[in-house]
Length: 467
Image (tube, rainbow, N blue to C red; front, side, top):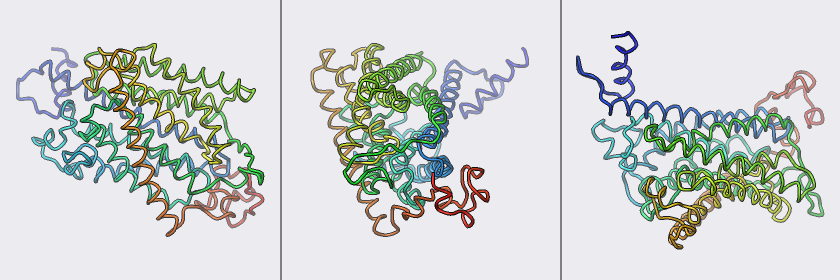
């Protein structure tokens, strides 16, 4: 036997976590489990890479004086997510418990022979628990990253620690249990394949609350109520960030199959890509018609809004429906951003709620219209949509899930952030905001060569630091 083939049993044993007896040949089931395990890890890495996408997108869409802070908070955010989700979040989301939250599996302290009992909601997949945790923690990290976009350029660093901890433990994880962990929405058959509601609406709603409580950035609105554009400092960063996010989304959606065998994950990747493309084109033509210019920022948000929308429905809809879902998401996003900025006077620097919240609502509702019978049967969740003769049942379930999730996240986020506001405070001082978070919070500029004396706080005036 060739050397490479002699290593196969060892590799399969390592991947599946099973020690093969001496002389025992790997079975087909061993090979399939090994392939599935590798795919889940690869998909998790793709989703983790989305943190780099968020860092570039948000840093590029905001001002130079805050670039280092905004990019760096993605590292802090994911580190915090990992620890909290390991300690309590994974158990609350997927642990066996009641219809509201899980009550078992804290700190992943589970005997090997009890994994499927403790985490029954994940028992359909045979991949090791470590792979399942890694795949789910990167999802939680994305949801928290979405929140930070809505409070960019004016929040204290302490907010990241306090709110981030509570968000993962008591907000994200609870909604995750409702929909994915065997909770009450799961029992109703709510269709949210990869998280238009669980990940994106949750993060977007928290971002909306943060933007409301913090108030607008200095200079955003004039005395007569008209708004001013506060342009980002590097559009190229934002473009590259969106490309990375688009790339990572193949792990986000296609990876949610938790299996490489069966050839279903390429189909999910197909619908994901079609929706994103439609969102980009629809958004750029819409903003061109409304504002008179094919704004690049809106085009980028059109891609993201479409990806958010297709995240719930990617496994349930036909390719033509994916194009429709993505296009509508791109169009709605444009009007949503303008509505929140100009009518409601809410300063959301990166359009977090419009891109992730509004598009997440549309994407979740879309399966109530477009879910195809054969795909519903394949996934095994819910019923066909209205346009396939399924009636209004699935649309009602989707609406109920969106409404309940939005209400819980909004109220919980408001209470937590209000308590932070009246204790340690949410917002930095006016002087600190003018100086920028890089210097005021961290003592060093993200672009020190642009400032005198290397951007050192003690030697830099407010005027010199203003961008």
